[in-house]
Image (cartoon, rainbow, N blue to C red; front, top):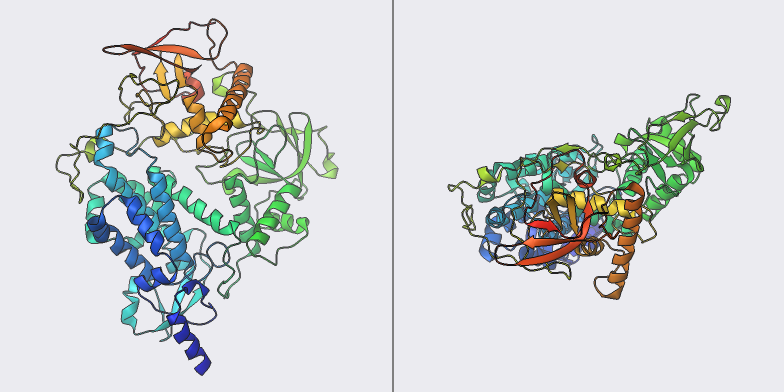
Length: 620
């Protein structure tokens, strides 16, 4: 008893709380002591700077919410045995997500498809909503995944009031099993952690509040830009922590996480990050026909085992067949007609591999599901009594090769935009920053490039209802890849589609990468290619290296376009068209690629034509 008491006194004096031994009871601390003890004071300063709110507004709107969150979760981990599993893991992870989300938010023009005036007027409320979404995204874990057992006897949750009023001095963290993703559905129940002034401000913007609450409740179809920003920031924080091996100073588990859950979680993470590549014509980890995804047996099992080993797991079966059995026994890997787990696929009549067969919906987030493989995909049973070869194959529907038309590009599912800038721009609405919908936006500085001129026309960005879609899918491009990736041209076009949806790529504006002309979609070059390159991590910004990669990327795109007969060449047989900008006082010229509408918008109605652009190159 004396030894334990001394440990507690010593622990409370420590400045580095992350080194506490989680086997011992943990001290109940104030938010300030937790933040400083976990070394998060610099991160808090960064969050204040990124909020752009100013000291007074930050202390009235942001800091109270942060303090209430920290005091509510104390030093509980973010997970039992995955990421940020040490003392204070949930606070550390949440600060990471807030900081990253606010950085990412600055590259978004919100509300999407709105005017510069509205974007400027609502700048701070969108940032605050992103902050709240990041702050509360994992708060539900305190109600369903972990329990705080006070030294006075009972268990406690923040819904019961302040932990300081319980009379307890220490607590232990217990882990409980709950329904998958239940913590996400409970996040909205902690909305009271946001100060009243902040809640009142958010309720003045119903469309913003709708996205925020949809994100916190796990509604992937309605969480909009807020959910997308925070989801990406969450993934970055998790991946960064796992990359360094996670937290070795973990809590003792009161209940083991089932092996199938650990295996499947690891598999989903590998697919989501692109570590397991899908739909590559020249080989990869798997292929998708839409409803089902076929994953190469050995490649998949080895990657999952290594991922879990890197996370500190020591009890993962070394025999790959054991992993196959676990997935099959729990209904994840679909059985062959004779109840086996192993199937075969033949890719483009050339590559035959043994695979596991999964339902696509059980592996991928609804917004991250891959499109059907572009090529020939045939799946056959590996059962010996059925022949065990492709001599009697069961064909799997697949998207035909791109050589047909633009409509053969991978399918996209769209939902209507939820934003209503006109409603949010009522003259009666004000915010704590004093900005109203009638505020005048500052003059924007246009992106400059050797092919972009200063006299481009000032046309408006498409508004909701004008035909601009919001696809639910995300870009299929991994965060990093090399120029030898055969799918790079597809990644580029998909990046364009997603950028238009997210409001990160403008249309028909002076700083736009995309213009709608009567001949199709005009893609400003080489600016669009350089933007794509800079948004990924396979090269450094600027210099000859960027120029070289830009040229290589355009050549790869040209080969794909030539094969698919997608782009229109000039009458001289060149890829780059020249368009004249017929401005009010003078004329200028910009250059770029010309694609059919369907290559970017599919069967959906595009924005209106930019009538100020006139083709000078002619057509082949």
